[in-house]
Amino acid sequence: RFFAQSLLRFLGFIFWATAAVQVFGGVLLILMFKNYRYLFQETYLSLPGWLALTSALVLLPTGVLAVSISVKCSRNQQGTLMYLLVLLLCLEMSSAALAHSYSVRTASQLESTMGHLVHQHNWTCSQDPGNSAVDVIQRKLQCCGVHNYTDWLKASSWYRPPCVPESCCKEKHSHCRGDLGHVEQLYDEGCLKKLQDQLCFAMLYIFWCCIVLSILELLAAVSNGILMRHQPFHELRIL
Image (cartoon, rainbow, N blue to C red):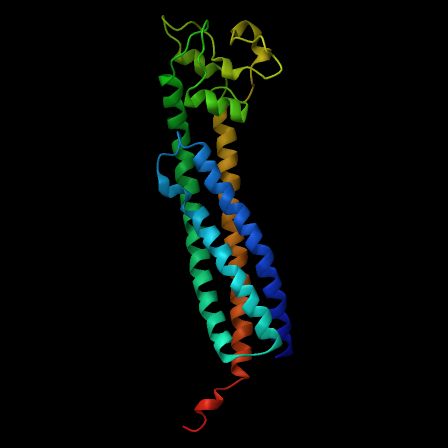
């Protein structure tokens, strides 16, 4: 019983700390899909992030109850804590499953979506408006093309001379106009790998946070159950 009380108290403080970790992961994922909404048309892809934020909100009262029960046992508080732990376990498992599923699904769609945007991009070497979705992505990620700058050569035609948009130019080269005669002024990496790395990091962050939190919640449920076993229903003894 003493070990269960100590563990429950410790887990209560851990729940408060992990709430901040969950908020970070949820906001990171939501902002990523918002910033690159041109590539991710499905709004439900940010659902794991919203589930993570919901879990963070539930973790706060759960931590309060865990610490309170470890000091003074109350049958109502123990029951409420058990319900909150079950709710958290459902949220965490759902978020982890969705994060893993969406990570595999969106990674395979990125290449075709980026390739389509590159081929649909309307630019000229003499006058580059630089306001399209591709330009915004290339400036944010400091990349050029899908795999590298040669993807723009494949998109060139008789009315599009062999050059790249100005968004491919490195910031330190202010006079760069996308001329392929000065390849050293262009970003070396393609946008696909950088996007996949960001997506993989955000999804794996959510996934492993949910897995670790689920294990901690199971430990809290076991500790709470041990304490409930040592405190029988006194009001039902008359039966």
